[in-house]
Image (cartoon, rainbow, N blue to C red; front, side):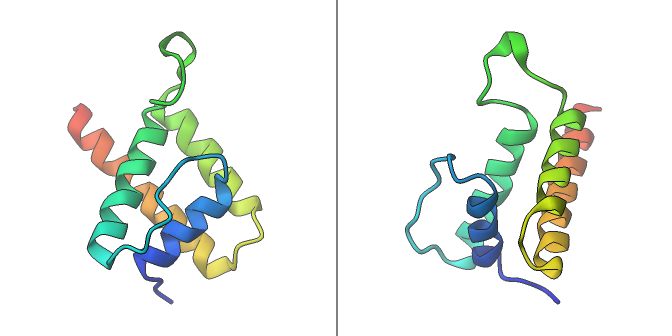
Amino acid sequence: MTYPFSALLDAYRRLWPNRSITTETLDEQKSKALLYETISQELRDEWTHPRVRQSPEAKFYYAVKRAAASDLPDGMKVALIQAYLTVMEQLQANHT
């Protein structure tokens, strides 16, 4: 089952309620761009002081663990983890 990016963005907000992400209604393209950019910032640990930042791999592990343990529907968990995988692969491709 595929979920629209607007639904995945809402799921991300549920996982990370303290993150300040726009609550305005966005079209699918803007929702996708915002979701991927937010995940990218999270994996690069941009919201943490530089001296205590963790690797993207560690952040990816924690994000997947949090998504898997959440009360989201299983299909939504898989779709959100797939979004994390997509961004992680992009980060690794850009890093090499």
